[in-house]
Length: 509
Image 1 (cartoon, one colour):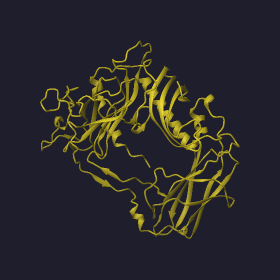
Image 2 (cartoon, one colour):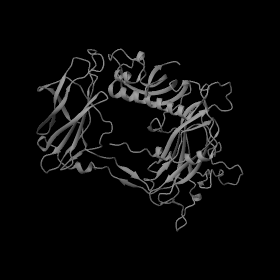
Image 3 (tube, one colour):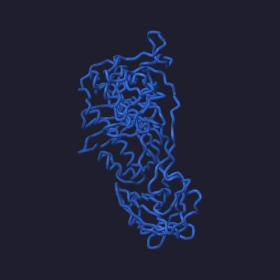
Image 4 (cartoon, helix red, strand yellow):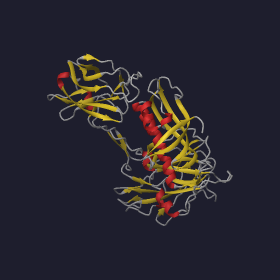
């Protein structure tokens, strides 16, 4: 099932283009001035991480432009009215520090499809009710068996929870452990009806380096009997044969062939939010960008929604909330209400102050505060502000180099994902420098979850060789060895290797 679009991420995408067209070029990052040791106190808010765009947002912690120290909108003239900034262009709705109003926007709830309630009153599926057909394959060192359970006859029934399985070889049980995998599980009983089969998904990592085993069939117990379908075949060892590792077979609960979660929709559900938030700026400098809102249908801005600007600074997560400057939108309907005309991009100027003191790479995000959480996110490269002095000799870090750094962070996350899925030994072979790879899979810690919390540039030689200081959140099964269960700080030296990167992890630069 496709991941739903994160509302915050959708909001953060639409306001940067206009400011960038009108504003002076931002200051470049001085690579030699980047220091290790700076790390966010909280995790990144992540929507999607990629080499070209990062959909994660964490908000910075120093005072933002447009607010007094007590958090109220600034009013330097003492008029009692919020202050507007100058327009970045005549076709841009100007920014104004309008306090958030937290309006009650209309919503409608779309039930999950299929709805688990449809299965609730049906009898449990018996072995005679179903016919099993299998498909599968292998990718990234993991073999899969997908079981399609179709209805025999015309009386619908239900499947629920995890199946009762026995792995067999020539009719005899095989000692291969089973492990329940509930990630993204369907939330309830599954209706099996004509044209609506149930599905069971099994996977087995190629990290079986104990005595070889075979699994030619799998028996599933059901009321009134059992169903038998083909198994995985022989075990595979991509590590050191005889090392003893015994990868389990991961088993999902029953689920429909296709399904989607329940969703709460507002009138802004189909709104497109656009912006380029991959920006570079000096610490404590004004930060201006433009968000573009485009609706496929006429969309009345009444009540006017709020939005949030978020940053990730070194002292924690912070955010500012404002009301959108709807009154300044040039389009009005026949009742005088501002609206977004169908298919017409409308750009809104945004303004804040950089929260981080630099040098660092942080997250910047913009989100429309609706049930759909439409927004956009990007990476904010912060160079040292005026308070930080000292000679600089390195060339500025250009846009291409900043994209390279973001790609390296993505590679680190991919290493963690592969470690979790296929084991540390296979992950190291794919991502880690050859002389830093473990010699065998024996005794290596297993990862149940892992993510990059924060990354700062520590040193820079070139786009082919640089070092990042990263904070990782790891949850480990078994002996963690040199790792911690929880937060881990590491220096990661990144070396370009063909079209990708090789990584070397260390506890010091």
